[in-house]
Amino acid sequence: MAMSIASKCSRGSRTLLGGLVDSFFASLNASSEVTCNNLLSQQQRTFIQMRTVLKVADNSGAKKVMCIQALKGKKGARLGDTIVASVKEAAPNGKVKKGKVVYAVVVRAAMQRGRCDGSEIKFDDNAVVLVDKQGQPVGTRVFGPVPHELRQKKHVKILSLAKHIA
Image (cartoon, rainbow, N blue to C red; front, side, top):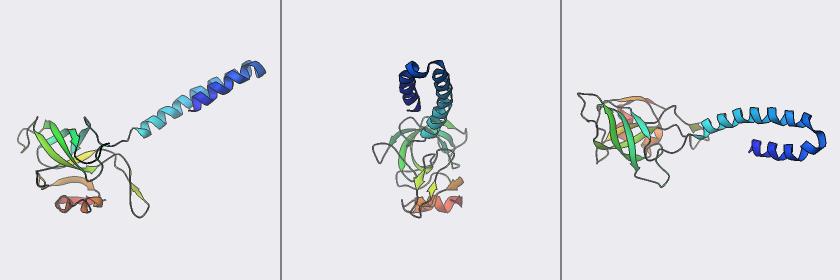
């Protein structure tokens, strides 16, 4: 947006002030490209959607999964939502093998979520805990912080397995 405004202004001012204004807008365009790149990196925090690769935050044996489908919502999944995923990396002696299709609950998401008290929570990575069809966790431990919003989504067993609740 800043580049389009600068280019429109520079076209109209070329006839009035000449090269001085052209050099100013050239430097403005260079600095606005850096700003636009920073804004794009901040805007890439979106919903967890199809083909998103996520970490597994439990000891079920899987290390990374890829989202096949979000079971709730058109745009994708957020904190506490259940997804269908395919295991992409797995430990050799784990309960879950590579290529298996599993259900998972999103416990960490890079997209920010507002809370009732006005604060917002967001994490550095996207992570899930593998669950069975009834919603019970496959693993016996949950690693890393887990938001307390999972209590509202009826995933109390995951909260009880977690060490740190954010």
